[in-house]
Image 1 (cartoon, rainbow, N blue to C red):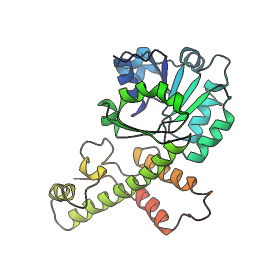
Image 2: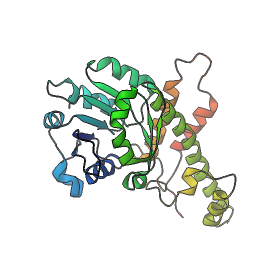
Image 3: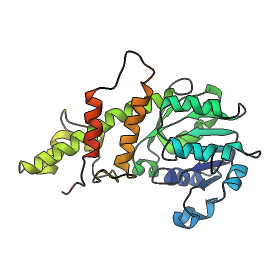
Image 4: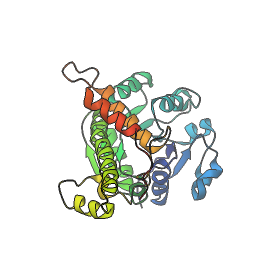
Length: 277
């Protein structure tokens, strides 16, 4: 059982946030959840869900944000939920959503100086969250990260401490850029195998043992969303959002610009249809 003695709140208890909250609680850490959906929708974790944002803010010392995007992060921190503009509020915010590193800098400027901020995006499908096998990419003050390290070791298997605030998110958006290319490439390869009359599972076995090996292809049957086509709000659309975050990150770089490859990658994601084995 973990010796971490601060109270943790997980904001955004979706496909990733909920299993993260559950494994923290199962490890003996006092953990609560908060989501825009009512608490009755969260199964065995429902008694730990705090629907009221004020109660959530007052109860928790550390908030791990796993909400979907920039707007939901702003709503959580300063807007409709306003967790970090309340007098009685958490002292630490851990951003585990995948967002642009440029936004993390903006978030630091908007938060009160007394609030500790670290970026800790994670990699891995929901099954990895349930099995405590996530990879975390950490950026922030080394003293704060060291204090929080027991949380990451409960939830994850690979922990990368990468430097000051924003470096974790930089690594994550670049990682997801590469992952996004494999999502498009693998799904296109499977569709072409079907068109050519080849057994797709045989092709997957070949690719897994050869130069076509990718995280997405190798774990295709373990990834909850691998069969999805593109639709607003689903996980493939989140991959698109992450790639756009990586493109936002380079806007301040004079010698790096988005090009036709980036446009084609985004178009490829948006053209994906549901996979039919």
